[in-house]
Image (cartoon, rainbow, N blue to C red):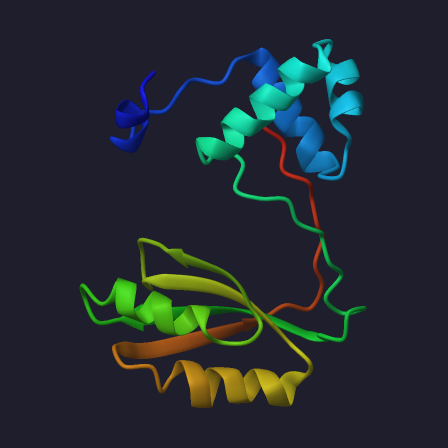
Length: 160
């Protein structure tokens, strides 16, 4: 597949080995190429090339650490839903990305338009984030805050 085809939005399909590599990296993003290669039964060069291709294609968007936010000093977490003015998603998203504590933002369908996960030091900081920062963003019509009492982190698993 050419670079022009990839730029046009076409995706290369992932084979069994690619999916196995992705599962391993989801479990341990710090796994060595040698370890990955041994576990999926390919050469190191093959594993390296496959990972590089998946990074280049945008299948792998990065390598991150999974953080316990409470232990890291962010004791308040919430999902915040937003209703926004129609066709303002890009502007609202840009403003939301500049806010502290925002972990995830999604444009969704249903009763509300945006769902975001935020982490703050405490409830006072959460209140400030929602009432003073998010609600003051142009084109945000309404918010609803759902406090997170307890989180269970599950590793995502790709189907075979």
